[in-house]
Image 1 (cartoon, rainbow, N blue to C red):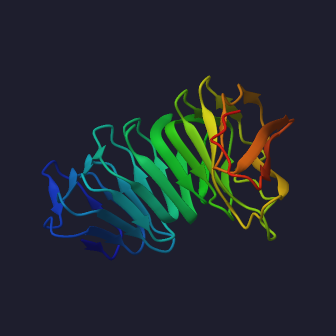
Image 2 (spheres, rainbow, N blue to C red):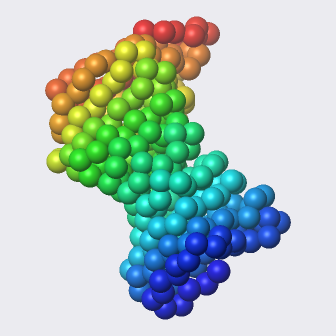
Image 3 (cartoon, rainbow, N blue to C red):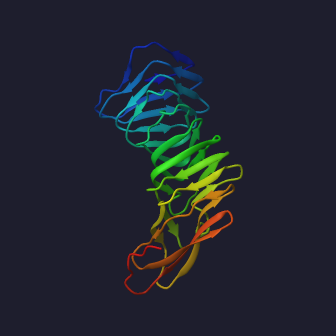
Length: 272
């Protein structure tokens, strides 16, 4: 479905996009557009929404997407209906995805933020997973990650801004990839920047170092995993390391670091 100019599409009848044979797309090129009618992306195909330029698309009706939801384009898309049923992975490749309803997304979603993608919250949210190198705008809200946080990759940083809280639930694993060499090796993988709120770590949450790129036998290095401008509540229960590594977590004001050493002998699976 392509919308070339400002539109307000209302009504109560379901608007179905796609035939279920492949991705189902919604394209908005210019101007503010509101779709108040219920919107269904046909089963079997991923929902692909493009908001180009400075366009703004408000999906005010209930959105049904059973095979994932991907946002493209530098514009903004707003999800504002509590009856949304968006299943599968949610990806923000570019621009802003705004969540203004408690069930705008659901607790089983994993949200992936590419480098140019931003997630903006207007309500508290709970997601199963959060990953990528994009940005989160908390908007004085609490974002809870229940199972997996994977920020930044080996070379980038996920940034979290505005007052509020990032909460890691008791079974959440914060997974980090690190680069042992190069200009990005000292960059934090998760940064709660100036103006951001609290980092809240529930008892039982842990850190896993998934891999270290460029490490050589015998190297020792200290990496900054998390920087936070607000306060920290709680500590991680344990640290999981790859085979052949030793390490420990270090807590400093405003920072959580890990010191790693690649040992020459066959490593063991260490919990610290």
